Image (cartoon, rainbow, N blue to C red; front, side, top):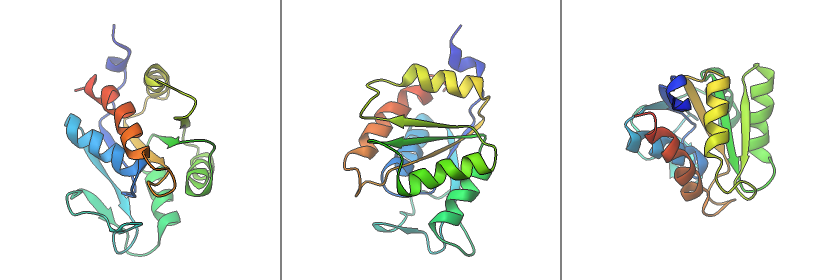
Length: 161
């Protein structure tokens, strides 16, 4: 029996930042899976404003990146944090907030894990994740992270649709 069938992942959420966040949204959209999440006031991202093609993201009435990050952690059943290397900055804040709110989290260091597909599948199943928060490095700090996260996550989502 396919392990992914044993979980009921129904939605991907993220904060819409460049890099890992948008890769999660793009993979969900391309796989036909519901998506959403919270954005900072003003739809702020490092490249200006989050593109309007991400229509299902909601803007906070007030607050910046940390508030957005916390709300996405709260609204999810678990968070996967993708990086090239160790957790730093906003990625480490995401881990801290997941721990604060008692939400499971998984760090995928894409420099160490060539194909974390099975690890992600098992983690989703064990933690019974329905709403998955995708977080991690932004593109400017980790060039190529969008492609790496998309290529990692899309096969997981394809197995579910």
